[in-house]
Amino acid sequence: MKRLTVPKIRAHKADGETAKPLVMLTAYTARQAQLLDAHCDMLLVGDSLAQVIYGLPTTIPVTLDMMATHAAAVVRGSYHSVVVVDMPFGSYEQSPQQAFESATFLLKQSGAAAVKLEGGAQMAETVSFLNQRGIPVMGHVGLTPQAVNVLGGYAARGRSDAEAEKIVGDARALDEAGAFAIVLEGVLEPIAIEATGAVSCPTIGIGASAQCDGQVLVTEDMLGMFERVPRFVKKYADIAGVIETTVAQYAEEVRGRSFPTPDQTYQPKS
Ligand code: KIV
Ligand code: NA
Image (tube, rainbow, N blue to C red; front, side, top):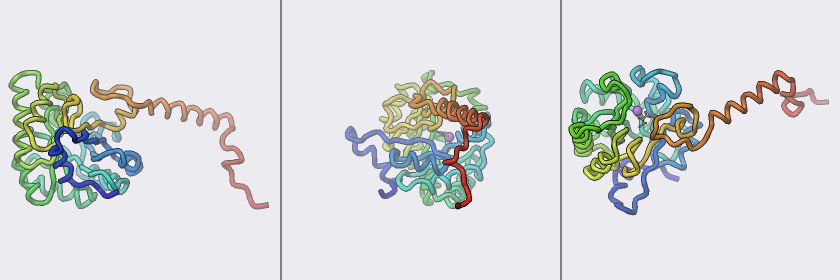
């Protein structure tokens, strides 16, 4: 299986009604990437690794080094999906030049194909700057977690007419700037419908209804690794439960001296 390309993702929408929604999940490690790769169109090395891997309270502290390290692991673990890397907070907002330097570092260190950054119309110039210089960009509008200190939390966006209009305008601006896809996070369904209809690139929804051109979730959330997840997450499995019962059994067998058995033991040749 040859690796999908960014132009194929962008062109996806041209297939119209016959196009199957794009499938994206987050991945932070090589083994995780191996398990997800064949089922996905895109793997996102999300800065959500802050909470999922590092136990950080927000994505604000994430660094370029952290993103590059995990992105490289995900590229090594995959051969089919387009690997997209999140630009961490503070690494791109200042200027197109700053963004280019940061994105170049991420792609050189990891071998990933594209970056994702948060923000709408105010990032359009940067998106176009990067795209014209060989770096495909995925946009991300609506609920943008790096802006948590401005937004004051992680509530769904677009409840007022002005906010709804801004989100659709942001999506349009990113599309016109050349974004190859746009994540719509935590927005009301009518906004997802309007934004999806307003842009030529695919929209990828997370908490943005079934009306987007694709869907993304944090893998650990949908696998049931965490007790508390946002309302928009469907838990497809109870991996935390599997780990807990498995580890409890291991602990009991070690303490009861029933593990290891001769099967797991080396003996000198007789
Ligand atoms: O960091 C992340 O996981 C993301 C997705 C949830 C879109 O940005
Ligand atoms: Na992110």
